[in-house]
Image (cartoon, rainbow, N blue to C red; front, side, top):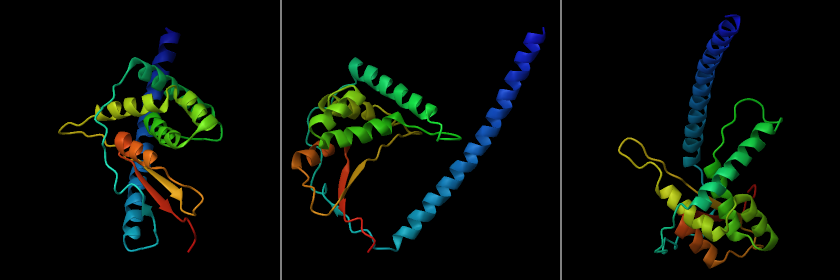
Length: 193
């Protein structure tokens, strides 16, 4: 009987701390939303961004739509759990954590498409698929996200490069990102001027 009472008491305490957590999370989300709106409004009147849109003349040309394969499901699950395990074990990250394995996988996939050699091989090993397989599977997966009347999931990706003449962006990279990610690519000097 004492064990049952302790279990009930612990359960009530968890429910109460969950409610407190929900209130704190709601407060933080409201604060973040307000900050994002303030930043976007303050950016409207400035002309400090001198980014060159490298992807302006690129649009989806791929006829293929890809597929969410069993290999992708396994690789994505493995990547997601490894990412979660790493985030939870990092003692320097205190407090609540918000993590999107899909965003992390897409970010790495964008970079992997522009990588080569050992770097590309390492990124593919982390993601569990080749970039070609990943591009098609992530495209198919994102096309299957909620698109109903009352809900819609939209993904937004862009790549930003330092525009100092040291990097030559290849056309096939730009086309690949347009085909599979609808990603925009910008070159910006990133100077203090």
